[in-house]
Length: 181
Image (cartoon, rainbow, N blue to C red; front, top):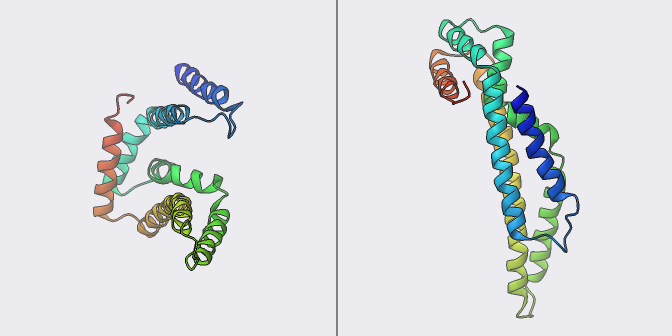
């Protein structure tokens, strides 16, 4: 666990140092790409570390799923392993209404520009469509996470069927194949 804490400290320290003086005038694509690479490293590290902390519990949960005898702790672990990331993302994401407002505003701006006689209006609409695309991608990701949670809850609310248990067992077995377990 100590090595995990050290690695987490190292990665988060990198982020703190990389963004502390970041602003619109000094942001560069290669820096953002490197931050994205480090974010992927952080996510992989966190997923693997979390799974490592619960290898034995995952094995016990697999057995409980086979017997249909999940206890509350195993059910919580199952939820955390399958949809925990989505739940914490939705709890921390506060921009959905802002995205929707920007979406409405930009669509109205495009609506106003579409009848313009200015030949540059098409390129302005195109530029605004790039902004809309990014907002729609954020909204799509947000709704995907909501759907993951809703589907999991819907499919497990009245108990887990044999087919669902088999699917969950396969997912959990793959998590045990991690080099950390």
